[in-house]
Image 1 (cartoon, helix red, strand yellow):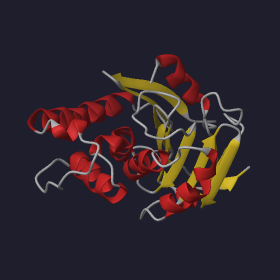
Image 2 (tube, rainbow, N blue to C red):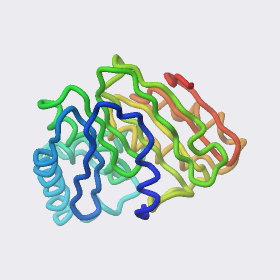
Image 3 (cartoon, rainbow, N blue to C red):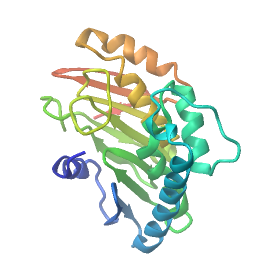
Image 4 (cartoon, helix red, strand yellow):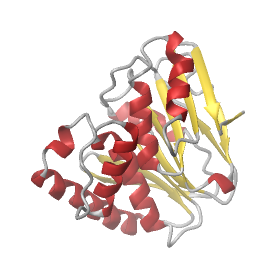
Amino acid sequence: MKHDEERTYRSLINKDNLLSYNVSIAESDLLISSDTNLSREALQSLAKHRHYLETYIRKHPNFRTSLLPLAEDDFAPPIIKDMLSQAKICGVGPMAGVAGAVSEFVGHDLLQRTENLIIENGGDIFLKSKKTLTVSVYAGNSPLSYKVNFMIRPDDTPLGVCTSSATVGPSISFGRADAVCVLSPSATLADAAASAIGNTVKRKTDITKSLDYGMKIPGVSGIIIIIGSDMGVIGNVELL
C-alpha cells in the first residue's frame, strides 16, 4: 500500500483517551493505540514475529508465493502455523493472512500490559476494547468510502477487522470490489477470508452470492462488500 493510502486508513476508529504511536520495521508499519505507550514492547514483538516469518520463508520460499493453501507444519512457529491453518480454511495462500496475523500476534503480546488495544496494519485491524468503538470503512474511490460506519461492542472483542480491496493497495485480488471488510475473532482468518471473498466479486450482481459464500467460511462473523455505489452486509455487523 502506498504511504498516502496507508495514512487514509488511519482515521478509521475513534480512539479517545488512548495513546497512539507508530511502530515499523521494513514494510510492517503498525499504528497502535493503547492505555499507555508500549512502543518498546511492540517493537520487540514485531521484530520477533517478523524474524519467524523471514526465517521460515528462507527455508520454504513457496510460503511467500503460493496462491493456494500449503500443508500444515507442526514444527513451525505459532504465527506460521496460524497462517497455514487459516489459509487452508479460506482456500488461499498463507500470505493472504500476513497483515492480520502480524496485528494479532503483536496484539496478544501487548494485551498482557493494556486493557484497550487497537493495532492497524494497512487496513487490517486487531482490537480489544472495554468500550464501544466505531469503525469506518475505507473503499478507495467509491462514493461510499468513509460513509459506511459500524459499531463494535466490548463483548465482541478481541476481534479482527480486515479489509481487502481490488482497487486500493498492493494486495493481489482477482475481483473488482472497492472493499471487502470481514469481521472474525481471528484477525489472521479475517484477512485471509477478505482475500478469498474479494476474489469472487467481479461485478455488482455478485455481492449477494459473495456474502453467502463468505458466511460459509468457519470463523467469519460479519462481512461488508462495497463495489462502486453498491453495498451488501451480512452477519454480526451493527451499522450506524
